[in-house]
Length: 518
Image (cartoon, rainbow, N blue to C red):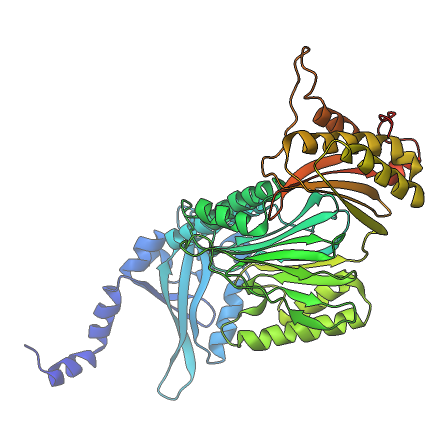
């Protein structure tokens, strides 16, 4: 075996280094500061297709694609200043005209007195790597586009009884779009459903799961299920999905009653902004995320004042690797107080929060969702009366309703409202248990009538046979009301209908029919 001393001696010979460079798997060439090639190893010949005789003595520009003709002069200027250029990615052309992606490292060659006389270039073909990277980038772009399409996010849909401002920023890092979603739902009878959720993970799977959950959540809310039952059903639904870990909060607001019901599945706290701009967290049990199972979700009923603003968001807004989440939540609180106090509106408040917490608007490590929902006004009037589950309660209910409509100046809606209320009271008398409660309310936009009983089976519209004497009441409600539905209560159910006041007042509403006397 050759000793270290002999190896060093061999290494001091010019022929040794020439053999070493010649046998390198990387293409190596040397050139003057004018760009004339003076050395060309075997790997350079394999890479570019030129023999050493064809290359040596020619200008290195022979390897340049037409659009990079000026690049070599810039590189030689840097080398002449004594700079070393590491892993510079560019393109070069072979003898057959094929353009390769190349990784180049260049360094100056100095004489004994330190002056720079030449340049050495080490080159590697990275065409396959760049192609793979481009394909991967295209794949990510396609997945991102699909995820965004599945996400269906954007500005919050404005619905009656609420004002909203929303912001959704899809992740620009890693696997891209994640599983954030929000939804505003018109539940009818002046009630509003608000969802914000976050599927763990990012990419196509998370977006698909999000789309499924968003659709399921909307359907369950529209079916009238209370928030805790919505969460329990979504929890069972989530366990069979490929991303079985989801945080979510569902809030059902009833401005007419001045209350809201909230249920959380492991989600971040909802912030409530009082009409005087004070901000506090809603006292809602955090619960466990969807997909975990085993622990029932709890809902709480809380007061809802006119002028209240609710702030819902996902962890992308407040969680970072370099800051404490509690400090970030305090910052959100401070921003909201200042923004609301300045009376700039919901859109201005949303912008202010985003610009403060996320000053870098180009990159997001996680999806960012922010939703502000305001309930600016309560109903102009509301009234209710208790009734026994007896036949005499039907005309009594009509008299109560007629008196209130006359008191409120809504006589244009009286005929239709009295007919539909009679049908619902009759159904309650025949098929439900008492006592009953008749509630009527109106806003600038609509009139609402609600009948609450103590029976859980819900009525459903059906086509009655020609020989039947009943079965047509709900068909009338379906035909004449602008909206109707049912929802469960703690001890029974509520059946409701609404009529648009503006349309009826202009003679453009549903047909008015004469009710039975009473």
